[in-house]
Image (cartoon, rainbow, N blue to C red; front, side, top):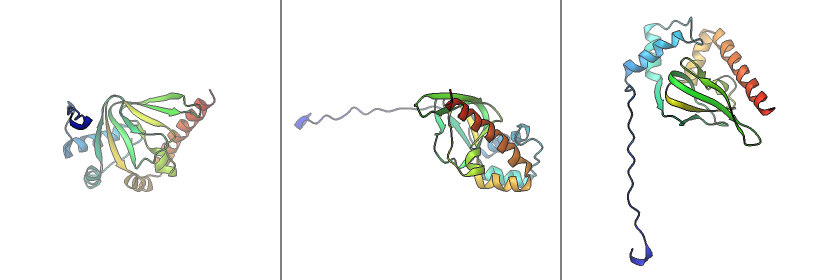
Length: 171
């Protein structure tokens, strides 16, 4: 405390993670599970395509309350919920935050940037432990070129969410 200067006591925060470890096999398992989701049903990935996606995809973990996507930001990935749940909400002009949906296994987010290049109209935060698979927008666009019906399905979900955000603003 010489010269009136205090030295702060060092604080150490230790985070532990009890979830599954990220390994190429875990990412492959998560990608294989995509075919059971509504969005990717009917999509067949051969071994070479699956290997490419495993190299490019990232499995990410979030704890309860952690923000995955911030409203107004560009989302560089299409995120697919692998395990857990997330809350999709939007902040209105009067600064109220309205919860719109709960996303669960197989649901996706990041579609606005993927299809229109616009900023995200909503925020997404983990509701409990959350595991998501991040698919690069460029990879998903290539997939859409090979399966154009995928763009229609993503567009329909995007339209439903856009209407929910507009309806929340009118409350």
